[in-house]
Image 1: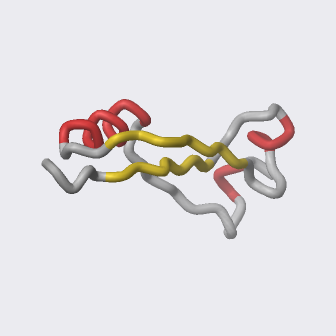
Image 2: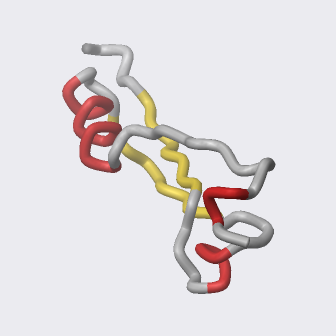
Length: 63
């Protein structure tokens, strides 16, 4: 079965790392940490490609 024929697949959209991090910096946030994670299964996990990430950022009160 081709990947596009699977009924349980969807399309996901996300900002690029560049868009997300630059947007946070331009909004006055300080980047404190970054975390990557993987799907529980699938081709990307099999190849060790992170599919999720999150930032920990804070906006200083003096801005």
